[in-house]
Image 1 (cartoon, helix red, strand yellow):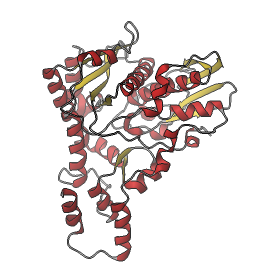
Image 2: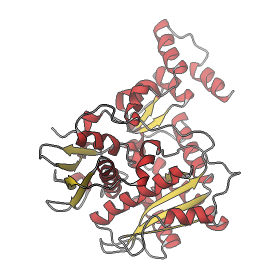
Image 3: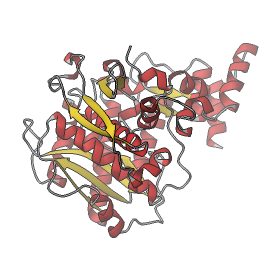
Image 4: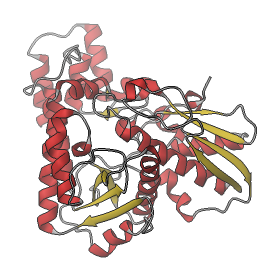
Length: 394
C-alpha cells in the first residue's frame, strides 16, 4: 500500500505522456535484477584458461560498496599480477584506501583458494614494487600482489561456499538469536597470534550500544556532503542501471524506480533529508543496524597495507564459514572511516571494542572491520558483478 501511495504521489495527479508511460511501465513492472548482471555467480563454465577460471571465482569477493576495484595482468606465464583499479575507489569515504586494500585481501584469498581447487599452489608476494602509501588520490599504478603459480595446490573445504556466499543487506530475524558458541566459532576462524585478531559479542547491552553506534555512523555518512555524493553516484536504481553498471549500491525500490523513470530523481547534489532517496537509504541503514543480533570485529596490531590485506583474507574466510552455517554476516564499518566528520564515532568504536584511541600511525592497534551477524528473513540474492574481461589489465 505504501508503494502505491508513493506511485500516485510521484505522478502528482498529472497525465503521463505515452513515452513516459512506456518508460514507467518498464521500471515499475520489471523489478528483477537482470540475469546477465549475475552470470558470474554461475561459475566459470567452460572457460579453458585456468587462471581466468580462478579469477572468475575471485571477483565474487566482497568489497566496499561493491566497487570490485581489481585489475589482473596475465602477461607473465605461470603468474597473476594484481593491481588496484584506481578509477573504482572512494576517496571521500575511504581517503587513505584502507577499505579498498581490505577488499584486495578478500580477492587474493579467493584467488588462492580457486587455484588450489584446480591443483595449483600460489605463492603470494605482496607489494613487489613497494606499498601503496599516503592518500588514495596520489597512488601510483604499482602492483598490489604477484602470485607465482606451481603444482601441488591443496583444496580448501571453504571453497564449496564461494558461489553461495552473500552479503545480506536486509533485516535480520529478531526472533532468532545467534548463540555465543556460533559467534566464537566464527571469531576462532582467525588464528591467534597473527596479524589479525578477531572477537565478537551477542551480549544484549553491548549489542544495543553497537547498534546505536552503527546507526549514527550511517547517518553521518549520508549527511556529509562529500560522502553523500559519493554514495549517490554509486546508487544503481532499477534493472536498467543495475545491468549497465553491475556494481555499486543496488537499490530496486519501487518508488525510487518510478522517480527515476519520471526524471524526478536529482543526482546533481546530495539528497536532501526530506527526499525520498535519503529517507529510503536512511531507513535501510537503520534497519540493518537495529536488527543486528550480534557483532564480530577484526583488528590488527598495526595499520600497514599488509595488515589490511590480512584483514580482507581473514574476513572472507569468516564470511564463507558463516555461509556454511546459514548465518548472515554484513560489514557495518562506517564508524571506522577516516573522513573528518566521522572522527567521534571512530574514536568511540576503538574505545568500545579495543579499549584504545584511534591509530595515529601505521604501528598502532587498529580496528579494521565491524560486522553485524544474524539470520536473514528471506533468501539473500547475489550482488551484481561485471563481466570477467572487465578485470583484465590492458
